[in-house]
Length: 383
Image 1: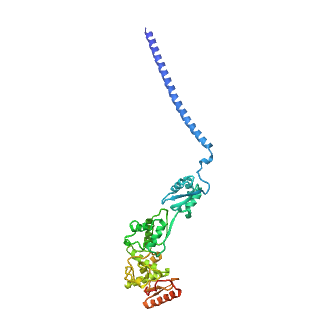
Image 2: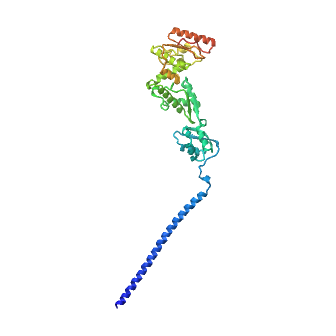
Image 3: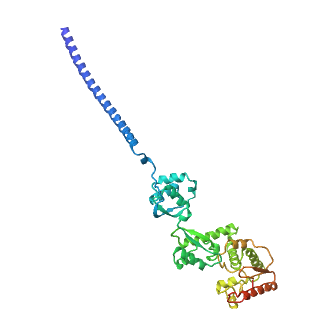
């Protein structure tokens, strides 16, 4: 009986063991199937990558080079280089305008040329489809810049300057005058007391297309301030120095005479003498010829230095750097009079007293008679 039960127990255990073994074998097969699948995917991916790289090696060599054009280009296009633009900014602008084949080729070209750092902001005339090296050289050539240039000579009044600005900007004269009245916009300093005369520095200026009257006036005023600062003029003395410098500018014919005439002005002011300058008369009573008439000199105006003592209320013209320098650093002397005795050469004679001055005036009158100089009046004994 005992053997029978033992035999039955053994048989049941054996069956369970077999089932467990079969289950483990199935589990093991599934695990290895997953592993094999994963390995196959990895091998496939590696193979695809290898195939891609192999395909790249079969591609033409030129496709890996930076694109560039060959020639000097064709047609005309305008490119703008803005202040503060980096080399990459310039390259992008050239590429978008169709000048170069790729931004990278210009960056590479510019990085090997130290002159590239000297590219000036502005508007440039370029060709389309240019070789990068040619494009760079075009940007370095000032002749390719699209500029608006104005030259303002010394000794003119604001009306003459306004007309030149109108011609430059293609705005009307009325537009320029209106811009000048906005003293805050053009940066006219307080010491000018709203009077722009004398504050438009005579020089040559360059502007980009689209320049406005305010742009021009502002630049001219700022240049005047720079010149005064360079000459060491204190802020509170600016208007006075410009006024004296404007008188020097109108009266002097030669640079050598500027500091000497400036000293005559200071000497007369110190003695409370009238300046008696024809240039101040012509400022309020314009007339033809070199000289002024008795009627002109009788004009009642604070600018008429025959009529009133001291300096006029403000400048009478735009003084240049030489006249400003003379007003700041006059040539020391006791002279109280001067007169130009040769209107062609600009030769000027000086005197410490009226008697000697009258002799110099006689010399001028003789010169006028001999040369038949055109004038609407006789030389005065003033100055």
